[in-house]
Image (tube, rainbow, N blue to C red; front, side, top):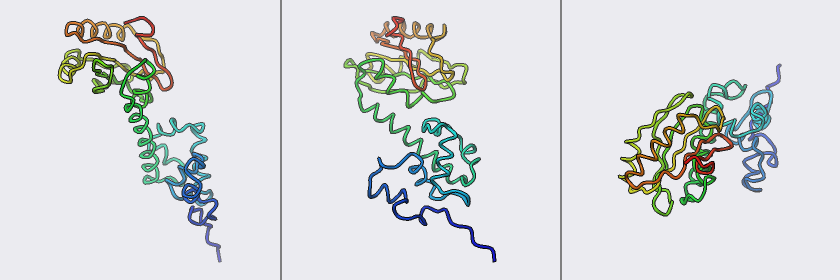
Length: 232
């Protein structure tokens, strides 16, 4: 009689090897990335444990969680043992992590430098594959009143409506604006269009005693500041 295949479910491991128990008794910091993802999926496939499967998935993105978060549901399902439900669970968990980074940055509230703008906006637009243009509205203490997506475009560019920017600024009582958009290509060099819209917004805002303080081009790991480079 054919033997029943061994189960690779986490619940059948020894207690010392179970990621859930390890987290419970030793703390979450003791778990590897693969073990944390293994908790999400619960089981592997007939040939490998959940942790081994997750190690293989992570290896495919050079063990980079940011890159893992970019994988689509379909791409995750290409790994044997990852069905739709598990793929959705992984994607949802990584999206929560991305949003948490954004909220932590927002809690700083006061903008003190171009770096603080980057820390605020990178979790939101730094990893996108399309271009988005955002406005950060500040009070006279440079504290964030509101951050708002103005437009969303294709990878080649996006449109900016100056009237909408100033209308929103007046509604929230902003005295300062910071512009931010991403370059999915990874280049940090501002285009002529970037320079033109910056100047256009600056001139229009000055007529209402509102200052455009900076314009950041954001990529996954770096940024370009118009203010730092003397372009504003």
